[in-house]
Structures are given as structure tokens and as C-alpha cells.
Image (cartoon, rainbow, N blue to C red):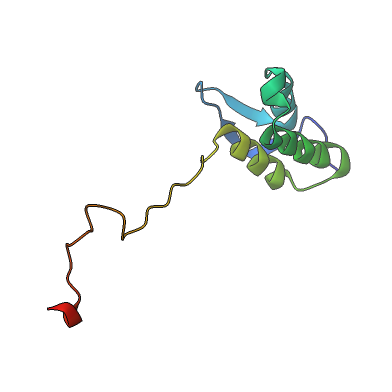
Length: 98
């Protein structure tokens, strides 16, 4: 069974250049976050999977992925319609319209 000193298969890179090597490092990192950040959904999920791995034998890879998703959010994707994008407008003429 795992505990808080269990090491991640690969260290988790931090935005400031540091690394998280153990479940304990990750838990300490989360607890040092500002309250508003700490209480956000990605960080709550990360803490949940860390606790599952350390205290209940959950998959350590889930803990690693939860931390990665909280540390490196992808943001909201922006989708553009080809019909509304000026660079595509009038560029191609369908065969039926030639």
C-alpha cells in the first residue's frame, strides 16, 4: 500500500521550474496555494486523487494526472466557423458554382 512518501513515476514539472517528486510534495504544494485557487475545482480534484493514492491505495498515475491538469490547464478552446472566417471566405468556389 502506498503512503504520502510514495514517489511519482516521473517528477511533475512546476511552472516556476521546480518539481514535485512525491505525493507529500504535491499535497504540500496544494496547501500553500491561495484559498481561492485551492478551492477551485481542478485543485480539489487533484487533492482528492492524491488522498485516494496515499491513503486508500488508488492509482498513483491518477494523482499525477490530476496534478498535471490543475497545474497546466488547457483553457477554453475557441472554435471558428470556416464560413465566418475571412481567410476562408471566397477562397474556394464549389464546382457547381463555376
